[in-house]
Length: 124
Length: 108
Image 1 (cartoon, chains in turn blue, brown):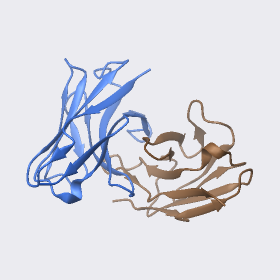
Image 2: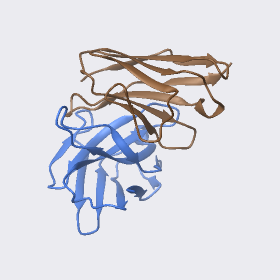
Image 3: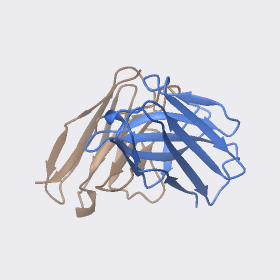
Image 4: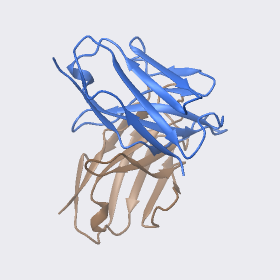
């Protein structure tokens, strides 16, 4: 079964760029049947979709974060990555990567599975 | 952006009782709605998709209903492992995926 694992620095300074990688195991990120997404959750709060990428490199981002987000894919490593620039304390959160199937009716399905999440703290 | 509103924020239920959670969309999402369960320190787990289809391995005590803008997640007889936070999510607007604020189901 497919598993996802986030990795990256747990501490980022304000105004710098947050960089995370999601490694996919048990399946190929190039299968063409899925979108690959990033989602975040501040402590004690709800879930916020950040954006997604297709194996071709095509992306869609949350409009509220679009100016600061870049998601990329490295099919040779079976990984996709998140970069969030100009971070502030408000970007402190657990960051999850997740997979969503491409479905005919809506274009995209629900998120399944998810990675375990990684806490990123923005602080000097 | 489609806004998802969940109610109540907290639901106090005794083990063995039924729990009914609501989710409302600011505009129609057809049946493109999912429910997730999240326990402390864990990632969300998919319970229901297509508004009413249980995901693989999800017990039959979980059921979903609704379409358009009004949705319900029902847990027929709460077990100890069901006390958690539940989120709904619409995937009808694939350019802007959004979640509800969550309902915490706690032991009464």
